[in-house]
Image (cartoon, rainbow, N blue to C red; front, side):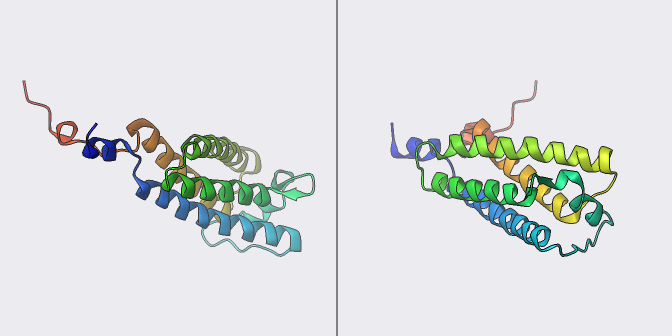
Length: 161
Protein backbone atom coordinates (compact mmCIF):
# COMPACT_ATOMS: atom_id res chain seq x y z
CA UNK A 1 0.00 0.00 0.00
CA UNK A 2 1.42 3.36 -0.95
CA UNK A 3 1.85 6.20 1.53
CA UNK A 4 -0.88 8.18 -0.26
CA UNK A 5 -3.37 5.32 0.06
CA UNK A 6 -2.51 4.88 3.73
CA UNK A 7 -3.06 8.60 4.34
CA UNK A 8 -6.45 8.46 2.62
CA UNK A 9 -7.61 5.54 4.78
CA UNK A 10 -6.81 7.29 8.05
CA UNK A 11 -9.56 9.33 9.66
CA UNK A 12 -9.26 13.06 9.28
CA UNK A 13 -8.08 14.55 12.58
CA UNK A 14 -9.95 17.78 11.76
CA UNK A 15 -13.31 16.07 12.26
CA UNK A 16 -12.22 14.78 15.65
CA UNK A 17 -10.81 18.19 16.56
CA UNK A 18 -14.16 19.75 15.70
CA UNK A 19 -15.91 17.09 17.80
CA UNK A 20 -13.59 17.87 20.71
CA UNK A 21 -14.32 21.61 20.44
CA UNK A 22 -18.09 21.00 20.30
CA UNK A 23 -17.75 18.75 23.33
CA UNK A 24 -16.01 21.53 25.25
CA UNK A 25 -18.95 23.80 24.49
CA UNK A 26 -21.35 21.15 25.75
CA UNK A 27 -19.22 20.61 28.83
CA UNK A 28 -19.37 24.33 29.67
CA UNK A 29 -23.16 24.37 29.13
CA UNK A 30 -23.66 21.27 31.30
CA UNK A 31 -21.44 22.55 34.09
CA UNK A 32 -23.35 25.84 34.11
CA UNK A 33 -26.69 24.01 34.34
CA UNK A 34 -25.37 21.73 37.08
CA UNK A 35 -24.08 24.64 39.16
CA UNK A 36 -27.31 26.62 38.81
CA UNK A 37 -29.34 23.52 39.73
CA UNK A 38 -27.25 22.80 42.82
CA UNK A 39 -27.18 26.44 43.99
CA UNK A 40 -30.87 27.03 43.25
CA UNK A 41 -30.17 30.03 41.03
CA UNK A 42 -32.62 30.96 38.30
CA UNK A 43 -31.55 30.57 34.69
CA UNK A 44 -32.64 33.33 32.34
CA UNK A 45 -33.69 32.25 28.89
CA UNK A 46 -33.25 34.61 25.97
CA UNK A 47 -35.03 32.87 23.07
CA UNK A 48 -37.70 30.98 25.04
CA UNK A 49 -39.60 31.47 28.25
CA UNK A 50 -39.60 27.94 29.63
CA UNK A 51 -36.23 27.60 31.34
CA UNK A 52 -37.68 27.68 34.86
CA UNK A 53 -40.38 25.13 34.02
CA UNK A 54 -37.92 22.73 32.40
CA UNK A 55 -35.10 23.07 34.90
CA UNK A 56 -37.35 22.77 37.95
CA UNK A 57 -39.39 19.84 36.61
CA UNK A 58 -39.24 16.27 37.90
CA UNK A 59 -37.36 15.42 34.69
CA UNK A 60 -34.42 17.71 35.52
CA UNK A 61 -32.70 15.26 37.86
CA UNK A 62 -32.25 11.60 38.65
CA UNK A 63 -32.69 11.41 42.39
CA UNK A 64 -30.63 14.28 43.72
CA UNK A 65 -28.25 14.35 40.72
CA UNK A 66 -29.06 17.02 38.13
CA UNK A 67 -29.15 15.89 34.50
CA UNK A 68 -26.55 18.53 33.75
CA UNK A 69 -24.03 16.46 35.73
CA UNK A 70 -24.71 13.46 33.49
CA UNK A 71 -24.36 15.76 30.49
CA UNK A 72 -21.02 17.00 31.80
CA UNK A 73 -19.82 13.41 32.12
CA UNK A 74 -20.98 12.62 28.60
CA UNK A 75 -19.37 15.70 27.09
CA UNK A 76 -16.13 15.12 29.00
CA UNK A 77 -16.02 11.53 27.73
CA UNK A 78 -16.77 12.72 24.18
CA UNK A 79 -14.03 15.36 24.43
CA UNK A 80 -11.50 12.83 25.71
CA UNK A 81 -12.38 10.21 23.10
CA UNK A 82 -12.42 12.72 20.23
CA UNK A 83 -8.99 13.94 21.30
CA UNK A 84 -7.68 10.37 21.46
CA UNK A 85 -9.25 9.61 18.06
CA UNK A 86 -7.53 12.66 16.57
CA UNK A 87 -4.25 11.11 17.68
CA UNK A 88 -5.33 7.77 16.17
CA UNK A 89 -5.68 5.72 19.32
CA UNK A 90 -7.04 2.35 18.17
CA UNK A 91 -10.40 2.04 19.95
CA UNK A 92 -11.22 5.70 20.54
CA UNK A 93 -13.46 6.00 17.43
CA UNK A 94 -15.57 3.02 18.48
CA UNK A 95 -16.02 4.27 22.05
CA UNK A 96 -16.74 7.79 20.81
CA UNK A 97 -19.52 6.36 18.65
CA UNK A 98 -21.00 4.51 21.62
CA UNK A 99 -20.87 7.56 23.92
CA UNK A 100 -22.36 9.89 21.30
CA UNK A 101 -25.10 7.35 20.49
CA UNK A 102 -26.08 7.30 24.16
CA UNK A 103 -26.05 11.08 24.26
CA UNK A 104 -28.23 11.24 21.13
CA UNK A 105 -30.83 8.85 22.54
CA UNK A 106 -30.95 10.84 25.78
CA UNK A 107 -31.22 14.12 23.87
CA UNK A 108 -34.11 12.86 21.74
CA UNK A 109 -35.93 11.71 24.89
CA UNK A 110 -35.41 15.06 26.60
CA UNK A 111 -36.57 16.96 23.51
CA UNK A 112 -39.72 14.81 23.54
CA UNK A 113 -40.26 15.62 27.22
CA UNK A 114 -39.85 19.35 26.62
CA UNK A 115 -42.15 19.40 23.60
CA UNK A 116 -44.91 16.99 24.57
CA UNK A 117 -44.86 16.63 28.36
CA UNK A 118 -43.72 19.98 29.72
CA UNK A 119 -44.74 22.13 26.73
CA UNK A 120 -41.77 24.35 27.53
CA UNK A 121 -38.24 24.71 26.20
CA UNK A 122 -34.96 25.73 27.78
CA UNK A 123 -32.37 27.63 25.72
CA UNK A 124 -29.47 25.86 27.40
CA UNK A 125 -31.08 22.47 26.88
CA UNK A 126 -31.66 23.29 23.21
CA UNK A 127 -28.01 24.36 22.91
CA UNK A 128 -26.97 21.01 24.35
CA UNK A 129 -29.29 19.24 21.91
CA UNK A 130 -27.79 21.12 18.97
CA UNK A 131 -24.27 20.25 20.11
CA UNK A 132 -25.19 16.58 20.53
CA UNK A 133 -26.81 16.48 17.09
CA UNK A 134 -23.66 18.06 15.64
CA UNK A 135 -21.48 15.47 17.38
CA UNK A 136 -23.75 12.73 16.04
CA UNK A 137 -23.38 14.10 12.52
CA UNK A 138 -19.59 14.10 12.81
CA UNK A 139 -19.56 10.53 14.14
CA UNK A 140 -21.87 9.45 11.29
CA UNK A 141 -19.64 11.11 8.69
CA UNK A 142 -16.57 9.39 10.09
CA UNK A 143 -18.39 6.07 10.26
CA UNK A 144 -19.85 6.11 6.76
CA UNK A 145 -16.87 7.63 4.98
CA UNK A 146 -14.23 5.91 7.04
CA UNK A 147 -13.06 9.39 7.92
CA UNK A 148 -11.06 9.60 4.72
CA UNK A 149 -11.22 12.28 2.07
CA UNK A 150 -12.92 11.35 -1.19
CA UNK A 151 -10.67 10.44 -4.07
CA UNK A 152 -10.79 12.27 -7.40
CA UNK A 153 -12.72 9.34 -8.91
CA UNK A 154 -15.32 9.54 -6.13
CA UNK A 155 -15.68 13.29 -6.64
CA UNK A 156 -16.03 13.10 -10.42
CA UNK A 157 -19.55 13.68 -11.72
CA UNK A 158 -21.38 10.73 -13.22
CA UNK A 159 -21.52 10.69 -17.04
CA UNK A 160 -24.85 11.70 -18.54
CA UNK A 161 -26.76 9.02 -20.45
